[in-house]
Length: 103
Image 1: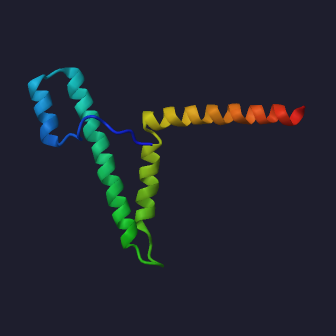
Image 2 (image 1 turned 135 degrees about the vertical axis):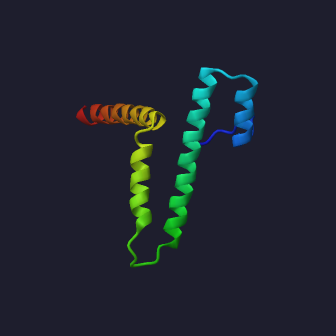
Image 3 (image 1 turned 180 degrees about the vertical axis):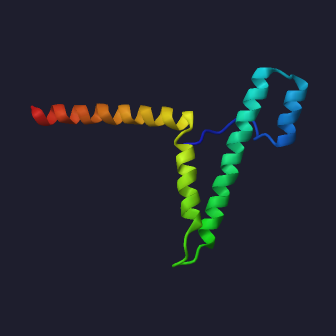
C-alpha cells in the first residue's frame, strides 16, 4: 500500500533547486535515483497506454514491453527486499501449517 507523504511530489525544477541550494555528492546521487524511478513510472504509463491501443488479434507490442518492464522492476532493490520478506513470511506460515498437519 502506498503511504501518503507530508511533502508534495517533486518536479524536475524543484529537485534541481534543492541541489542548487545545498549541493553534495549524497544529494546528487539521491536525485539521480529519483530521476531513474520517475523514468520507470513514465515507462509504465506508456506500457499501459499501448496496452489499451492493441486491438484483438493484433501482435501485442505492449505485452513485450510489459515483460521487459517487469524484469526491470524485479531487479530493483526495493522489490527484491520485499519479495525476500514475503517469501520468508510464507515459508514460516507453511512451516506452521505443516507442524499442525503432522500432529
